[in-house]
Amino acid sequence: MNALKPFEQAVLRAVQEPLPLCEQPFEVMAERLGCRQERLLAEIERLKTEGLIRGYRGQVNYRALGRVAVLVGAAIGEVQIEQAAATVSSLGGVSHNYQRDGQLNLWFTLQGGSAAEIDDALEWLRRKTGFTFYPFAAETIYKLDVRFDPSGPGPMWFTPDKPISRIVETPLPVPLTTQEKQALEAIQQELPLAARPFDCLLEKTSGKTPVELLRSLANKGVLGKITAVVDYRRLGYAANAMVCVAADEGRIDMLGGELARIPAVTHCYRRQRYAEWPYALYAMFHAQTLGQIDAFVGSFCQIHGAADYEILPTVREFKKKPVRIVF
Image (cartoon, rainbow, N blue to C red):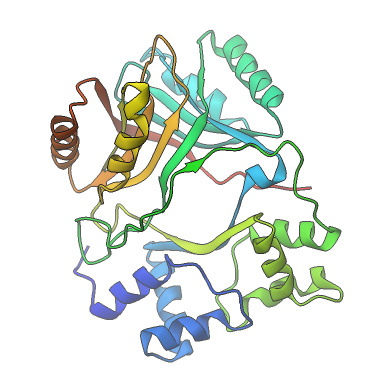
């Protein structure tokens, strides 16, 4: 890919920021960039056409709706992995499904309406494939803020320090009005690149403006950020790997916090452990090469005395599709 011009870089940074919840959010964004709204929208459309970004969609906090999700790992034979992966991907609750290089070589995220629904899905997979699937429930979030520097391969340009977030499942979903449910369903679809993008929700409002509905959903903790997604590979981040680190109970939070401060880390969680897989910390690394990731991890583990870890490079992507919440 040719080197990006300064304005292209500025727009690619801007689209990864939350879209303001106002009538004309792109006007606000254009003012921040020092350009006209028409130029900004044209540039976003061009970058989208070239495949550097995907369209704007709202992120849903599934936990606020009483839903649950787990990361799942399995050890699948090389001959059977494509068929097993296809079976996994057939589940509507699976959003991401990857082959990784490691003892557990098939990893996917599974979302459901309850823990029982998750258990049923994993049992169905076991019966269909003959393999054991290990659910790794998240217990603590140390970092979840994926933003990539468009100026070239290197550290992400912004790594906010945030307090440790303990996972608390919501047994009773946040109450929503019929209008809010309809708006939440609609905002998960791609927004139009228009001066008033939220007007596509007008038919859902009936008395409330689209912005009022979205602000209500955000205040209730159900609606997260509305952003575009960049193609990090096109920006030069060709390598990624999930890194699992074992730690004594008293050091897990400290090590999790330190992992989260590494600019190359986009996600960092504490997860459920098993005797067969004793790792408590899970971090996703993105870099230009696997060698860079090896160096990041090696340096971290040497500094902090973490001798037991696994680096699981991504081999293949079988599925990458957000789970759409419908009521």
